[in-house]
Length: 254
Figure: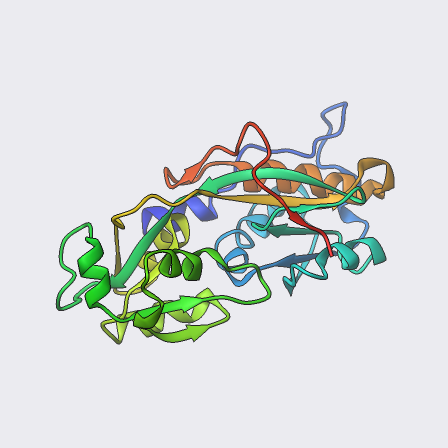
């Protein structure tokens, strides 16, 4: 098994123990949990939850819904969600934000790309290539913003709303895309793709867990937040950087 996928599937040390150490917290078995994640979260984070829960709370189940960053806080408030994971920073007195990790952005191309052959690219290289990019309700804004900042939007030939379409697209074409590094690692583990360093620095994105304030959570939700914080906060790749020590710039809640 590829090292990236092996690390992703491996469950970390048990959490969610009772205070007396007798076993998994019974609150995890009170019902299923409903989460909202982007397509990236579904591909890279979601598989780690049932893998870890299998030992700690075998009867826990998870329903994943598409993340809509503009409505996720409202869904949480209405009880439609138990938690959500997002990169855009939403400030609201109704929710708490728990940083999990940071990620840099890199380029991703087909393994046999006819022109991009090294482990890095220059700005003229990028200007000479055609690009695929992603934007949409899950909060995928950085790739398109990076291209715009360097005058490369006119080189975009494919735009989509989900990163999950990129692996099949890129391995069959000579397009290049900007993706979070750990996400790229996961994609290259299962597709004929490789990663290249871009010629510019981008601000790392912070992946965070959002939930109700502790006083407003049910016992099972309190277990869930602790469980997700520890499981998803574990570094399974060098591409995952520690979270910020101080909050990054925020976007207003809607």
